[in-house]
Length: 153
Image (tube, rainbow, N blue to C red):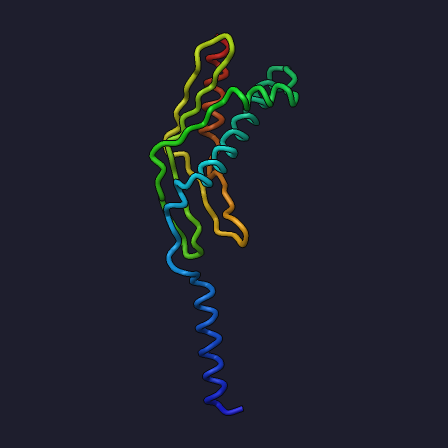
């Protein structure tokens, strides 16, 4: 094979690889506030909140069974405000943040609210659908602890 043919194949392979890596353009930062992202992050926040309530219950010697877990999930409302993009890396992964408002309704008390400012979450590109993660659950744990303390009053 001539050097010219090898060079042409090399250029073609490089161009195809570059096109595949670059995708169809710049990643869309609006994924930070899309309904799918909010639903997925809402599920992650709810799960972290419920886990912390379970830790609190078990630490105080109370059972935390599936029925109680479901009750906590049903009584918690998670809403987002001020969703925004924080960063985007070369692979197209987004770092996003939002103000998260947690409202816990208890049958015998008025609703208790906690606001988490700048809850950071990530949106990673993947082959079938984006993958979501929370960067820091400490704020959610603190909010769950504060709500639990209010319920005990």
